[in-house]
Length: 335
Image 1 (tube, rainbow, N blue to C red):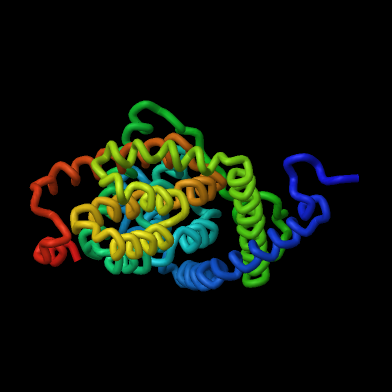
Image 2: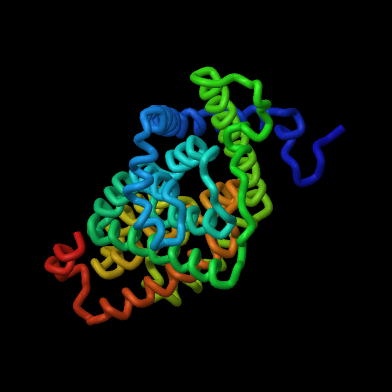
């Protein structure tokens, strides 16, 4: 019997599934190197009461954003380590975290806007834009958008239902007589890591399916008019679109390569890298935070709309006709 039409023969033989699981295992081991240390540090800090102290210290700032104190710890961890580090902190704090769907969506949006700042903005700087300026842009946008979402949802009573995060640690399924202490924490951590691996497998399979069905190409084509509408040069829009969908690291590398070939102006690089800094890896990262319970209108539609408005404003502010590749002083202002 032949392969089902539209499905590769290797998939029917199980080769695809094995290759997928192995690829996801390598991806998981990469993120586990970030997650496990974060989970250990948070657990030790919680044991000695440091989490409570930090929570009290940042409580006023989080209150301004209408978010619980623990959200500040998750956000700070995300800024320094990346989204998976933030998820690790979220899993460690889950048993004591009281959060609504609106607050979770706001927190996830903040994580998407400003994760792995030290690593990603170093790539941005190498591609031709200021580390400090783009980092401040990401952090400021994250705080503004998180507060906006929380305040609007609070006033309108939208997404007000409380969320239970027990599933992240397995506590929802554990009996009161279950293991406690270090053994209980180890079992909870193993459960959380297994859950992350399962999510990675599902995401990888879904992304492959979107690619095979041509949906990724359609999304790319749909993004092009938005990028141009924001004021991006038509020459840099295609490589920016790739980064927007696949990630800042890949998009930044493409911009570095294309800048050498096409001699992009400092302004063009700045606007493209601002887009990438605020909104990148739209498919994978969005699906990841949606698995945590975030609302798609908040973490995707609103995020892209705000990015478009900010980049369009930056395009107007920098439209002075003097930003060109032939002006070294312009490059110095942005580098």
